[in-house]
Amino acid sequence: MVSAVFHAPLEAAAASVAAAAPPLATSATTAAPAGPAPSRSSRPGIDWRTRLLAVGAPLAGLALLIGLWGLLTLKPGSIPSPGATFDAAVELFADPFYDKGPNDQGIGWNILFSLERVAVGFGMAAAVGIPLGFLIGRFSLLNQMVAPLVSLLRPVSPLAWLPIGLLVFKSADPAAIWTIFICSIWPMILNTAQGVQRVPQDYLNVARVLKLSEWQVVSKILFPAVLPYMLTGVRLSVGTAWLVIVAAEMLTGGVGIGFWVWDEWNNLNVQHILIAIFVIGIVGLLLEQALMFVAKRFSYDD
Image 1 (cartoon, rainbow, N blue to C red):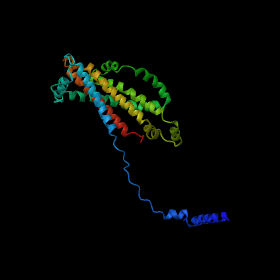
Image 2 (image 1 turned 180 degrees about the horizontal axis):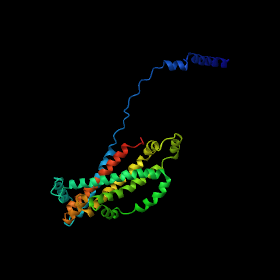
Image 3 (image 1 turned 60 degrees about the horizontal axis):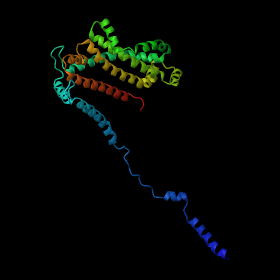
Image 4 (image 1 turned 180 degrees about the vertical axis):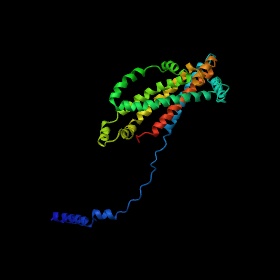
């Protein structure tokens, strides 16, 4: 009797609760709709620490260089101090484009003449080296023929080609351009050929199945894949060209930043030589950064 008295009400209560509870679907349909989630900006915050490091680290390195330079020139000597060099630079760049004859021109004209020679020699090297790199990478027989010649001639110092240019062209200006051409062509040939050789064979097999022409293979398949390698070769070549033109102009004379440095050495004007070193470095850096910007704009990785 005790069991019947206590268990029967519990079972009846459980049954009544289960019967009174609404079905799951009904409760889901009658639930109040959730409000819109609080909007959060999907824009990432500005990483000020990274930006400060990107700007501050180079400035700290430059300040360290100038500080060491100042310490080494505390005692008067043959090397001018940073302050004296800065004063000479202000005076020099006050009128960088003066022209008092072929042997007395401002540093601005000398930089422009050097850049013109680099542009001509580098452009000729690109017009020859990039197509040749495509051909070497595309055809194995041509690769076997040309690879030994490239390996033989590439290690030759660029200035060793200058006498050949003087012998052939009988003039200093085309000889300097020839030197730029011969030293700029190798990185473009090698990097372009390497890029072509690294194109997956599956892509070329698909092109063969689709019966694409050789021009379509180059423009649609090879060029997008080779572009990063090609631009790397171009960047290396322009750095080498700007490096070589200074030495070539020192030997050939005329007008140019290399000749200007040599002329200032003959005048024992060390301040102007130090200024020219900074100018040459800044121009080379700007050329490299410009090519890196072009490489990012034409990248197919995105």
